[in-house]
Length: 376
Image (cartoon, rainbow, N blue to C red; front, side, top):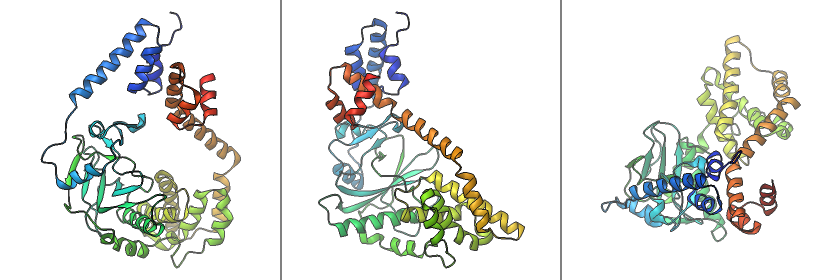
């Protein structure tokens, strides 16, 4: 059939080769070659699942057994986060690389994403570390003796205390501040290297020292040389990036030749975690730290300090209408690319006879958007 594009090609192009989508496509496809290709993909996936259908070992470590027992009965899981996440029975989810460790309104453990290979010092060791052997990065889990309640039925004071502890521990260990903890490396999966450092669960108060350590860290807000409040307020309308840059440059100036990128990055991440809502991403923080560090070190070599006039010129140069327009266009293209999988799934469900309302509930996308996708 000239010009015919089958469902297999559409699903591959949009990275939407889920089992549900394959079955829907098989029901709606009328081309024999397309049906054969879809069936082959589905059979291959079924064979792989049977081959990897393993059960947790009988001699599982008690701390891992506790974590598995407390997981949701139908957790989210994924093998490739770029293809999205799914939800299945716990026995099936445990066969995949990433898994949901906590109940929706309980925190049985504090999961952190450590994107460096430095030792975790200053605090009690985590219970479990799950390491990517390719780069040494890891997810760590601190398991609590009693799960911490969060959400609408939790004590506001207790939840705030847990949030402060979690944020402080993450800052002490230089964890990724943008990691939400929804999915963590599955400690039972053979793709990762799992290590047990503390066999007994912790109490929240065991990590109370993290609050003191964070308070003593040099930050933009409590630094004696900080004078940027007026400028931060004035340039806050330009965005979090400019306000963060203005606030963190002052303590960086007084650091002199010690204002390396890593040192300034700690200042930026500390300010970002406490002042920006929502916080900036790690890459943005690093670009700000790199900008400050480069200027400070260059100024020290030349024997002069940065002036407010220089800074205002920098802001005007990096926030022209043309630059902002390019940023907005790039952001829009990224958002459209991220929604391609949902578009393909919505069209398949519509072709299968599902109503717009049902599709909206399943995908969590407004019904008006679903209608526009399907009509286009």
